[in-house]
View 1 (cartoon, one colour):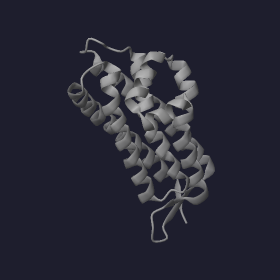
View 2: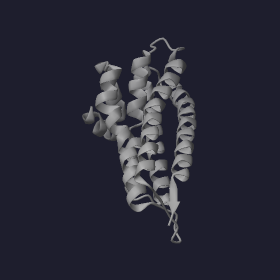
View 3: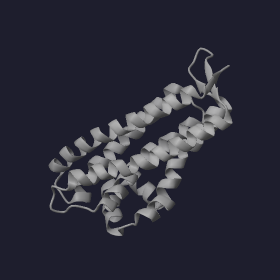
View 4: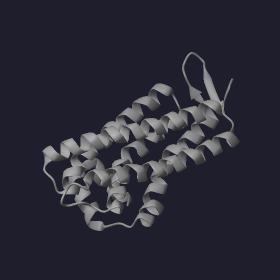
Length: 196
C-alpha cells in the first residue's frame, strides 16, 4: 500500500490503473492504509497542541490538555475514517451513470488514495502555526484535486473531458466534506484549549 504513495505523487494516472486492477478489499485497505494515513494528522495534531499549542502570533498560544486532546484526537480520527467512506459513496453514486461503473468498494479505495496528500499535509500540525497549517491544508487539497482530475478518467474508463466534469463535481463535494470536518475539528480544539 505504501508503495502507492510515491506513485500517486509521481505518476497518478498510471498508479490509479494499477490500484483499480488490484481490487483491494475494504477491511484490508482500512487496516493497512487508511488507518495509518489518517493517523498522521491526528498524532501530529495531538503532539503539536499538547506540547507547543496553537500559535496565533502576537504571543497568543492555546495549549490543549493531554486528556482533552486524546478525546478530540479519537473523534477526529473517527471522522476522517468516515469521511473517506462518505466521499467513496459520493463517487459511486455519481459513477452509476457510466457503463464502466466501479463497485462501492472500488470507489472507497479510490477516495482513500485521492485523500493521501491531505493526510500527508497533517505533518505540519507537529508545530501548529495557524498560517502554516492553512497553507499545508490548501496544498494538500490542491494536490488531491490534481489526483482526482488525473485519476478519474483512468478509474472510470472515460475521456478527459467527461473526467474533468466528474472530478470537478466530486471535488466540490469533497471540499464540502473537508470543510465540515475541519469546522468540527476547529470547534473541538477550540473548546479544549487553555490560554496561557
